[in-house]
Length: 216
Image (tube, rainbow, N blue to C red; front, side, top):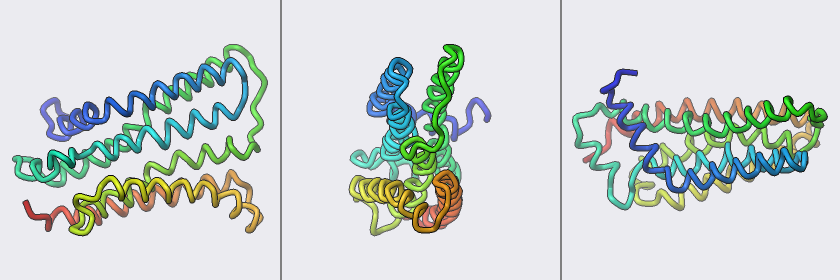
C-alpha cells in the first residue's frame, strides 16, 4: 500500500475513531489472557476469544463512520473513489482481528513455554469460541449494506445491535445444530466461519452497488 494511499489514510481514521472503545476490549483481552495463564481454566480462554473476535471488531464496525457528525456523507464529497472508501471499511474489519489474534498466539506461546497440560478440544465453550472468529465477518456483511441503504441511514446503532443479537443467536444455535444433525461441533464452527466469509465477500459487491447510487 502506497504511503499516500487514500485507503491508508481511511484505515488510520478508522483506527483512531475506534481507539477509545476498542482499547477497552483490548485491555479486557489482556486481562483474560493473564487470568487464563494463572488459572489454566479453559473458560477464560473462551472468554478471551469471544472478547477479541466478537466485541473488539464490533466497536470498529460501529466507528467506521462518524454517524453523528455525518462523516460518511462528508467523505463522499472528498476527492476519493468510492471504491476506496468501501475497501477501507472492509479492510478495517479484517485488521481489527489482528490484535486479538496476536494476543491469543502469545498466550498459547507462553503456555507452551511453561509446558502446561494440553487443552480439551471438545469443550463446548472452547469450540464455540472458534465460531466467534466468523462473527465479525457476519456482522459486517449484514451491517454495511443495510446501513448504506436509504432505510438504514441514521439507524446504525440499532442495526448493529440487531447484528450482534443475530451473531449471538448463531453461536447459541450451533450446539443444537451439532446435536440435531449429528455433526461434530468443530465442523459446525468451521462451517459458520466459512458461511460468514461468503456473506462478508458478497456484501462487498452489494454495498458497492449501493455506494455507486448514493446521493451526497
